[in-house]
Each structure stands twice: as structure tokens, then as C-alpha cells.
Image (cartoon, rainbow, N blue to C red; front, side, top):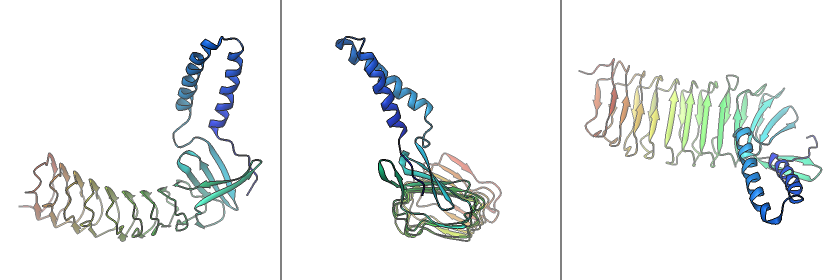
Length: 288
């Protein structure tokens, strides 16, 4: 690990502001100082907000062997890329040593868009992880089975066929786009509020225990069975382009929008309890 001196962008701004203050204090009377300092602080705050991209402030590049972490102080996020390694166990903290001593950086969020040589990620040791985004066609496997603090998981285009989230007790938002899953184990806890599964190979999905769901998008899968159960908060449901023969919505009393088009085998659709329904798309089916 190379030696680094870690300074935040805020520290640099603060030093510049203090320097400016000193110059002003030499020419202004005490009664005018507070007003000028207030204006200066507002200008500095606006400049930082305007020219510092969200989630990209204070970036620090760290190298551990053949793995590079581009660490962002904002919310403890890291972008990970490998040069030779194909497998990586992501640590819970990154450590750098600088002139001021050792700094420990917690990894709370990870974004992977270009993983380099790495095809397999294991986050089992990353116990503080709350957010993970991976959009990479070269990634074949991600392990997050027991990441109890994970709240948001977004996976796109990875080659994984089986995903176990049973231990992700805090998970509220799950999005899986063009991931060829044949097996999906959802969390045992009932915290999910948003679920997207788009273009998977799943043939059945049981969501009956997840009563907090408000938005469900399940388009372009191979679902022959979808079990919803009681969904008192569900307002938005898309399950178009599947192989559903039956859709039971009697527990979805708050549903306002439904798209179940292009389920060619759909012969039974129960909507009597959906008294709040405003939008319905239901073409190309077997209903009579």
C-alpha cells in the first residue's frame, strides 16, 4: 500500500477561506467583518455545491496489490478495478498511511462498472456495506448472502444464474436487470419496498411475505407463476411479457397501475379488490 497524505477537499477550501479572511480583516473595521465573512461563506458554499459532483467529491485512489480502489469520502463509496486478480474478497475497511498517520476508511457503498480482471466478488467480510451497484458484463458472481446492513442492491448485465439474499435483513430496494437468474432467494426479513427483475430466466416468484412492497416491475421474464398475497401498499405492478396463466390481485387494494400485457396464457385475472385502479394494460392474453 503506497504512502499517502490524505487531505479532503473541504480542508483545502477551509484553508483558502481563512487566508481570505486574514486579508479582509486588515482593511475592514470590526463592524463590517461579520457581514463580509457571511457573504464569503455563502459564495464558497455555492461554489463547492456547483462544481463538486455528488458522490464524486474528495476522491482518493488506493492500490492494494493488483486491485485499485477509487475511494470517495462522500458516504464512504469505492469503485473497484482489478489488473490481474479474477477473484476478490472486499474488506470492510481500507487503510492508508500518510504523514499524519494511519487513516481507516469504511466501505459503505460500492460501484462497479469496469471491474477489469475481476469476475468474482465476495462481500461477506464487508459488514458495513449499505449500497452496491454493479453494471458489468464481465462479472460472473457476486456474494452478498449475509450482508445484514445492505439496503440497496442494483445488478445489471452480470452473468450470475443464482443469487442468495436470505441474510440481507435491511434490504429495501432490489433491482436486477438482464441478469440470467434461474434461482433467486429473497431476504427472510420483510423490508423490501421496491423490486425490479427484468429479463431473467426465472419461472416462478413468491412475494407473499413482502407486505411493504409499493412498486414491482417484473417485465420480460419467463414467469409462469407469480404469488403476490396481501400487498396493502402496492401501487404499481408491471408483469408484462411473461408466461402467466393466472394473476390473483385480491390482496392489492391500493393498486393504481397494472401492466400485464403479452401474457399469452393468461386466462384468469382477479381485479375486484383493486378499487383504486387508474391505469390498466392487458392486451394479448387468453381472457374471455
